Image (cartoon, rainbow, N blue to C red; front, side, top):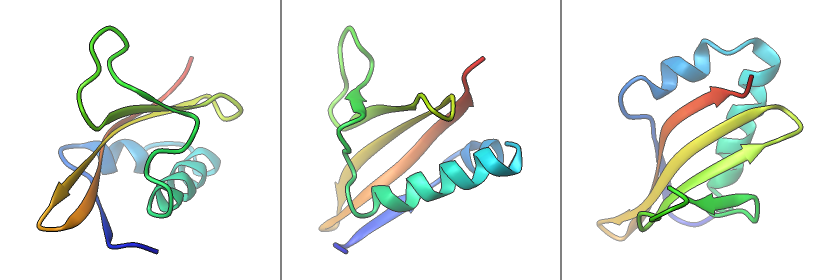
Length: 89
């Protein structure tokens, strides 16, 4: 594993904790996997019309969950910041 950190700014951790347990575990496992592969093939640059550098939307269609996050470099470390998590309705 490389030198990466995960951050949960604002209320993003609270959003994850408020999910029903099976979804919460799915999101937590996915975030853990981002440490190995910060931009998996399912991640798409975000927003669609004018993507910001390092901003991604990761939609997990089988679980109906979407995670928005950014990947930046700070002091030589990649920092993954989970911005928002939502359940698709």
